[in-house]
Length: 78
Image 1 (cartoon, rainbow, N blue to C red):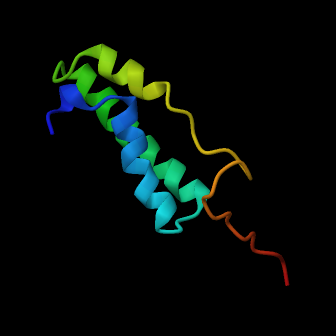
Image 2 (cartoon, one colour):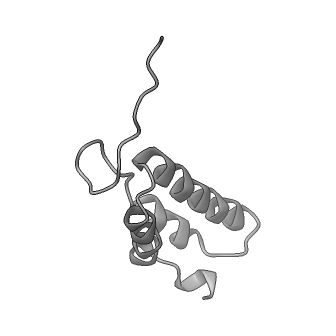
């Protein structure tokens, strides 16, 4: 799909299979952050309109215990 058509709902559509695949919330947020940073770079290189990046930034990260995404099990000291 062209980058100019990648709006917030498309980003959420990309995120949903990650939740369905049972990745942990923090990993999902990292991956979505990479996508946002890629669009930020594309704006700086004038490859896409700034409004695309601004729209993607409105998609917040998944919040602790407010989503179906799996939570990371903390590693405890022995």
